[in-house]
Length: 461
Ligand SMILES: CC(C)[C@H](C(=O)O)[C@@H](O)C(=O)O
Ligand code: SF4
Image (tube, rainbow, N blue to C red; front, side):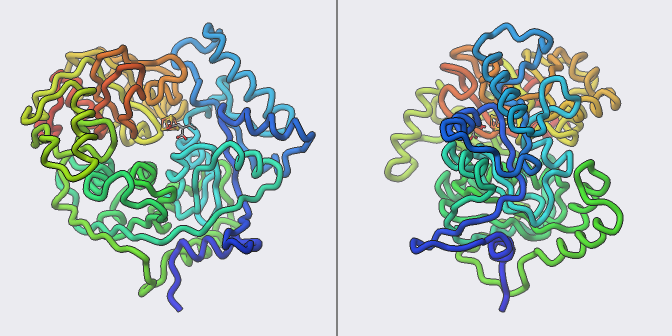
């Protein structure tokens, strides 16, 4: 019988099922950030130990200051960071804290350290855990109660999602990136388009993507409603992981690669849903509204809310009101006040290189910050001289963390300001109260920085 990668991964982790059809699954890696304190408090109430501290990894990212790290002025931020260190210390959990040179955003450092590997079940109390599925892992975000359950038992109750395959074929046009593939399918299917499904990305376009690109794509799966995104591991995956600190070594590596090759969906495996996309149809895409599905090619115009169906009419009207845009306005005429290059979506080395290629020798018309996905990415970028390109352009080069993606550390966009952002969510107030966010790829952020308005990055390529 032909089996999907989802079913292979699921069956390998299933311990038992209950009468309602939910599965109790073994968790191979549990990643915790500052938001885990509720879960640790639940454990403390019952005086429970952490079941597998060696499989649990702590990361300071959501509240990580990106400027002054020696002394955290903001008392609320300091409290969150302190709670995480106290909880991880108390339970003997390894922490990638502020002073660790490997610190960064949880979804960037897991893969970077080789903590994320094909075939593993990976949980984190964070919706963008789907990122790790790029390696052929079963990775999904969980809520606070589930985090406590995983801490206490190293298992998780979960209902098997339906399977969905998004096949993308052909060469990506110039200036079109993994971010555009994601925004394209979410705009097409909607933010609920993949609800209840695990998305496997397949096809020649996906095979040709780097691991960075695959991670960007899997990261955004949740914005299309899917809690799981995955790509079958292949030579690109193995080349990325070979030699990573936590990856297997020598004979164990060879044996692992052999196992990992068998994870791909069998030829002829049936999916509950199939979507096909021609890469040639994808253009550099930007959001104009307040959900990731409100996105269009940069060559387009702000849509007329009445051109939508049903509830989308009202949603579009409200979005345009919040975004202060009028129908018919050219997207490339929208002026921005600032830019943000960062987040677990698009702040890996390849993203920084692509943005720097546009900014090299140019000045940004608007201010902005560049926050690398991890401190190791930051160090690598500095070795390559990318930091100078950004600072010479007039942008701020800061430390790693979630930063302006969500503003929890205090890096926010002022009310009414418009930001061209490489992040994954353009919700109201996401980057700060009253802030207006346009999501796009790193090259599009760089192009917007140079011109001061949303711009087709292909003009610079
Ligand atoms: C704060 C955290 C739980 C949240 C998430 O679940 O994704 C955040 O990372 C986000 O991107 O909105
Ligand atoms: S960078 Fe943004 S999307 Fe990613 S985990 Fe942090 S807040 Fe969430």
